[in-house]
Length: 377
Image (tube, rainbow, N blue to C red; front, side, top):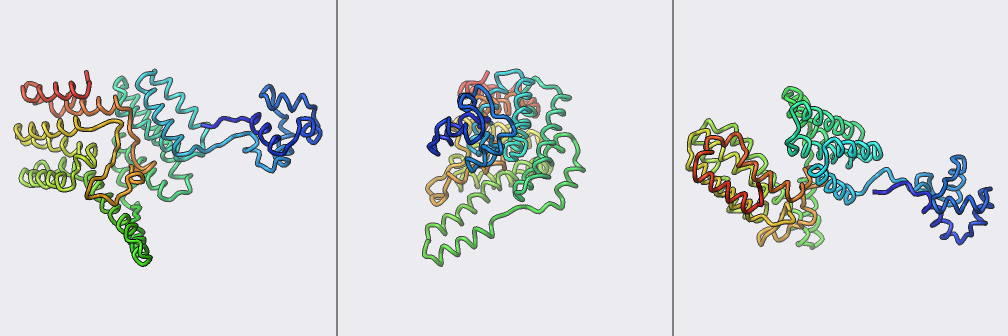
């Protein structure tokens, strides 16, 4: 992050112009000692001198002060990672105060504001086990306020749509389904698929077949990844139709195999296994639930770190995964490795929906292996 640093700016700009401290002092109408103190940070120019200094150096007053109200995406990602670690090692209120100070400082940096809101949900709601229901509600309300600000004030139409989605998620966590419906029922979905079709055709006309394949295969790749986000909630609501539920599980497993999802997008298929496990238990099909648990175990213990969310294989050879990572602002950024592993353990070992398996020896063995291989306690 960039702090206000007028001393550095004055020094650098004076040297770039080839000026001495005396020459700058004469132009501004101050002593050489004053300029020296400015450049060493011992004092600041009087506020009435700022326009004159900025005009002399042909820069804005913000540039003169070294103040940058925006942060780069790389800086935001770095900050998110630092804060996510702090949530696991520092007092919760202390980290929250730090986050609030940052959002005040970068009030108009909407990508940062959005990501702080995501951080609140990932950690304040889902990760910090010590919070009670009242505290969780408070943090969701605070996150919602940030998403609403982005939605109402950002100039980026796509970003506004993403913020709307996150606002709706907050309302869902707050137990307000009608508000969620009102927010989303008329919202238009952003899609770039037509752009990619046109781009591919343009590349073909230019004789650039590699680029055309990259565009279209990227869309196929995105579509398949997106498909796996719809399957778990669909399984959850059709578990009462046993035949249909099992057919959905069978087809999903075929898709996983067909598109090599265990290698390409292992974290993206974990929710499928969890939904399948719970559905089978609801239908008292314990053996099938345990089979899914074994598959879940195999996937989570095969994941390598540092975690790469999206990968390509021999089939998806035209996809540029350097740009196919989960888009900034559109999804949660990865948490630290310890939190990721612990959440994978908790999804099985501390899942209330799996209580019926607690006395099952095979289940106990799976949990033990999961903890041994992921380092959980």
